[in-house]
Image (cartoon, rainbow, N blue to C red; front, side, top):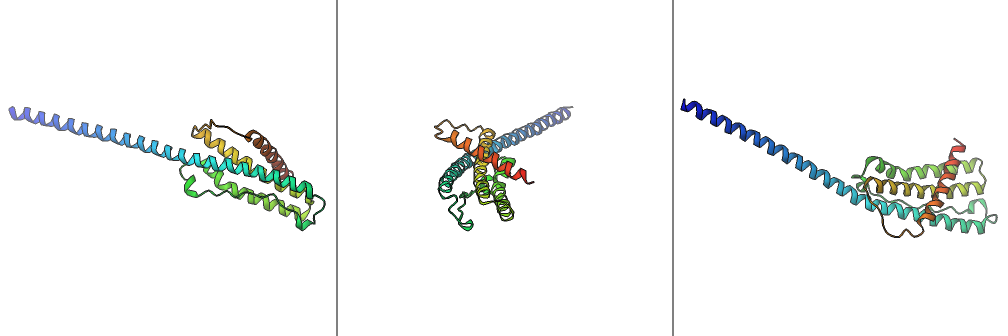
Length: 197
């Protein structure tokens, strides 16, 4: 009888130890998962901060290139030969694949494909120019494409800010003017490409 009671006590002790071990293991697993998720979010936020900075800088460069080009084009219009027509400088977007690997996948796709969209647009303008556009139309479409590039960069920066709750509280010198100019360019570029689709 005494052996039976001792066996029951051992079974209860063993059972509770196993249950306790399982509970502790489960809690540890949940804690590690939560910590890992928090770490990944933190890393994505840091990458987003750097990408927002690049996208804003790209937008400003596109707007400045657009305005510089239009000043020069306004002075040179009519006096240039077809081969001498300057183009609106398209900034280069340098984003390493590692810097978009931790952010939201849909936004990462927008960043990765942006340069290609601009190249395709540029090729389309050139092919239309060779076929039937006059110089003024082609040059305007090319400059609007630069503005489109800048506006898309602003939209990506806005999406990153929203996704990762990153609000900029500093001065936004000139940004409303830049955004409105780039939006106008973007709308004209979309209309240009839609007209001949």
